Image 1 (cartoon, helix red, strand yellow):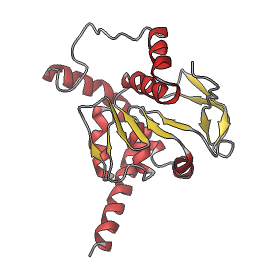
Image 2 (cartoon, one colour):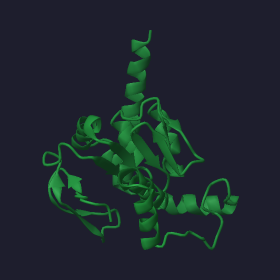
Image 3 (cartoon, helix red, strand yellow):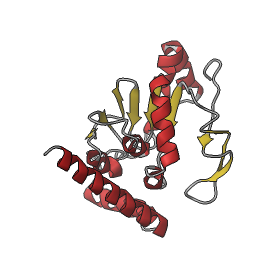
Length: 215
């Protein structure tokens, strides 16, 4: 819906990439090397975030393309990957509520009460559904408010949720516990546990080294 937009799904190699469900396949259309100068970068989130936050090829590509990109963005826990790449140092950023504490370990100021947070040319969106808000905001920046409004109507984005528990400040204790339990199912998978432990170890080492330099 944006004029002359060339959308790429970028990864180390082209081909199908399985989503965390193991059912949905997403096709990587281009490699990192084939995409040296993107105008907009969008990092998604999900259960694979922790592993992605330790992927040297991905982190290196993000660092390399950021200076030339008009916008570097993330949705949901994708901001953890940006933080791991060192792109959020000292900045305000948001994420899914469950990963806001992780941002803090990277020296980021986590923002819990804004769906879209801009820090210069870096824009982060909160959990899942806020990706639509980010998309419309970017459309307005790129193609103007009129086009963004037309896109909003085109996708009929007029949220009127049947329940009012879409933010931690609104949810009951029981709902918070239930949501945490649902999300924890992904975190107890062996691969996720291993990735989480390794990322925590990485952060502990980085923190220790930083303190030693400051002496």
